Each structure stands twice: as C-alpha cells, then as structure tokens.
Length: 134
Image 1 (tube, rainbow, N blue to C red):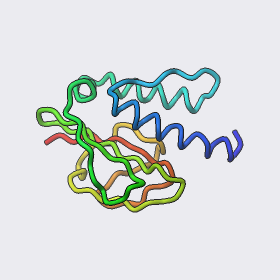
Image 2 (image 1 turned 45 degrees about the vertical axis):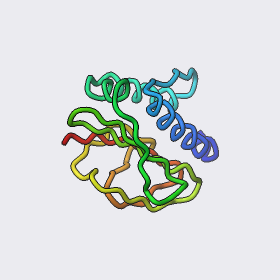
Image 3 (image 1 turned 135 degrees about the horizontal axis):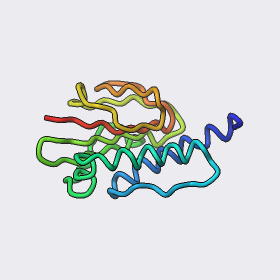
Image 4 (image 1 turned 180 degrees about the vertical axis):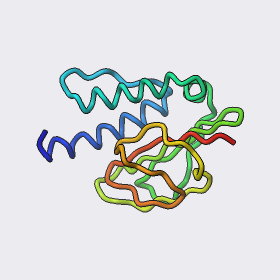
C-alpha cells in the first residue's frame, strides 16, 4: 500500500468510528482492503461486548466540549459505565484535554498505538474509544 493510500485510510477510519458508534451500529464489511476489513472487524468485536453493546444501544448520548471545534467528542453513559469517543476530524495535529479518562480502557482506535490520556496530542484523523467504569 502506498503512503498516499495509507494516509487516505485514516480519515475513513476516523469517520467510521465516530459515525458508527454515535449511531450505535457496526460498520459494513469492505471486500479487498485488508486494513479496512480488519478495522471494521475490530469495531464488530468491540460492539459485541455486552457492556459496550448496551451503551451503544441504550446509553445516554452527550456531546463533550473539549475546546477545539476540530475535535468531535461524545459520551454514551449508562449505569456505572461511560464510553468516551474522541476524534480529531482535521488533517493537522490537535491538542486535546478532557477530565476523567485516566484509568479507562481503550477499546478501539484508528491508530493501534494510541494511548489515551487526559491531555494529549491527537494525530491527523486520530480517533479512539475509551470505556470508563465508575
């Protein structure tokens, strides 16, 4: 896969993660693109977890203001569980800050090496979901 093709996958994965999880649905399977297929399979496995499934289907939806209009963030909450989804929708790096994700478990991300923290630099089109148990 060329560098240009690799770069083009990140925005697609970022949008898929945010839109599919915001709607509480899994993404389609894509044929012929191993990276996209693997990513959607990861989203599917993630959504099959009983707690995450309940959050996606029934959890209260709330937008999160992180102080940057280029970063889209929202929570789905239910009982003692919160799912925080954060996405940098820009082709530039962005600084992100939100309280309360320390100790959360990253459950899916566009970049496999993402390490969520309360203050971090988000790469272009970086998106991730963190499960937080209160």
